[in-house]
Amino acid sequence: MADLSDVGEKIAVLAGAAKYDASCASSGSTGRAGGASGAGAFGVSAPAGVCHSWTGDGRCVSLLKVLFSNVCRFDCAYCVNRASADVRRASFTVRELVDLTCAFYRRNYIEGLFLSSGIFSDSDIVMEKLIEVARTLRTEAGYGGYIHLKIIPGAGEKMIREAGIWADRLSANIELPTDRSLRYLAPQKSGGVIFGAMGEFSALQGQFEEDRKRIRSAPAFAPAGQSTQLIVGASAEDDRQIINLSDALYRKFSLRRVYYSAFIPPGGPGQGVPDPRLPVMTGPPEIMDRAAPPRHLLTREHRLYQADWLLRFYHFAAAEILDESSPFLDSRLDPKTAWALRHLEFFPVEVNRADYEALLRVPGIGAKTARRVLETRRSRSLTFDGLRRMGAVLKRARYFITCAGTFIDRPEDPRRLRRVLSDDEDGLQLPLFEF
Image 1 (cartoon, rainbow, N blue to C red):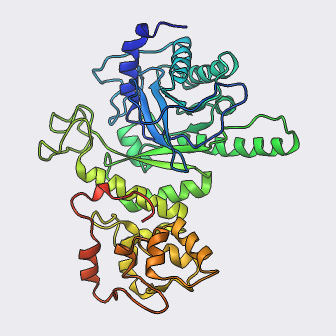
Image 2 (spheres, rainbow, N blue to C red):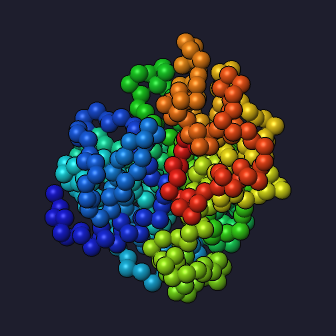
Image 3 (tube, rainbow, N blue to C red):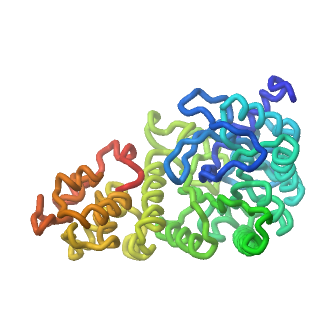
């Protein structure tokens, strides 16, 4: 096994270069037979390159998040690893990454690996290096933990097929919401090529599922599905365009997640924009920290995640969340509350009679609480105290529901409701889901 001190500098460079990719969450995929056993540690200080992510059921997991190489032939304006950037360059070998992953796993630092790379050569050659790491981990090291591989833009169907055999999840990052912006800020990338990779993944997934129905020993193909990332604020698209794109991706390619990443200007806000095509970020020094996006972009990212949750779990259509007259999400209201204030005619909802779909529309009642309501009222009538014990946030829900025809507060004045329900300056600290 390689001496980790020999690769310490590489970890520092290539873990730091990977931190801008948000599309790396484990999905709770089960470990593979013959691999390492034992769960990773929770709440411990982690070495460089270990990020904390969350599974679909809310568990915190730790992933080793690195690039194979930050050498890149592409010159995407928004990327810290672009060809013209004056940054330290480094590359792992396959053996170094395999040994590093196994060592971190055995020490309980990690539960999985997220591996991407700069495009230092032909796309298939770069993709083959990532695949070789995953294949070596599975076949030689006996590693059974979670693996997430990035699909390199332009990689062929054969490479995607091979990657899906060894990895739990694959992702092809769109980065920007329109092909026009992609051509402007990343002229060497193509939206058509990226969507083509997503389509290849979907077709292969269907083929492997059919094979497994006939042959029980047939291998699984990326059982945790595929995801993508959109950068928020690097280009001029509004939230409506982003939400419509996400909705289309979920429906067409059955994506597990779309991740939204607030734009961080390479070089740091207020320290000079390295590329004139990028927006100039300004603001107070205490807010404009080069290690984090500007606050208004963090707020926008936060609202997009909430809107995304409405698409995936609350059965909202994209057109219900935003329309042509209001193309941006409200920075002071979560999108579910904003919809409710625009549709007061829908309320009040009587919780003792409303169906699941109607309950999901009530601010302060999440999907879990709605299911508890349906289960509980089979045996007894609901009260406001009972709703609170089930998890309803009555601070929000009180204006939109009745129990046995009784109000806590009547939703008479939309302007008053907006003032009461608006987030304060610490709104980013509100729960991201169950709203």
